[in-house]
Length: 276
Image (cartoon, rainbow, N blue to C red; front, side, top):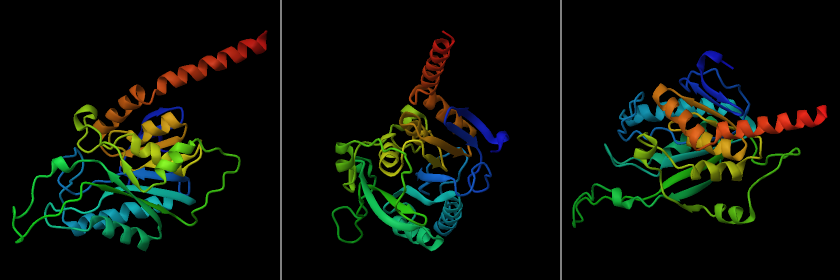
């Protein structure tokens, strides 16, 4: 653990203010699940990342971080990657297909894909040629969550427990998820995803107490889910302002401090009873 890079640490949650591509804060072969939504390269105005680079450069960046993620994952480690199906800003690109191809080349094995129906068709800004066959655009109002794994899919529980309910399991193993996105204004981040997304991935694909990594922490949604679900959460974020946003959300929404106080009070009671 590189203490110089720690921005926030409380109980089983830690935020590193660092560049994921070069970070040495996470041990190799230590992560059970990676849940992330990397930059989409659609000119979103992040503080510390250029989200409008040549597509070839974007895919090179993608390969670098997926290689790093592969090294950090356990043999039975899993990856839930939220990415667009395609893009039309700056030219049509098959983003999902290209990233899956790169991941498989690195060594990630494909398991399945969830289609997230975010219901954002109202945000479309172009139809191409209006009411004409000359050059219409087809825009799918969905995002993808591709599920991959490192070496073997089956995880051995070794006494660990799952906390997913029967109804959740039945609903979430259906590969079409419908829930709203997150408000940029509310969380003060240009491209947040809702806590519901990592919550489902974490409950489906990890046991209680497993380690979850978010390489592009952003507003902190993945770590909030970790805090609420009793997983060890590691977030890496290059931008200090976003680290602060994530920390504040963890305290407010993840109830980090409240749970710490509760645990401490139980410990005090136990000690006093032993003294008696």
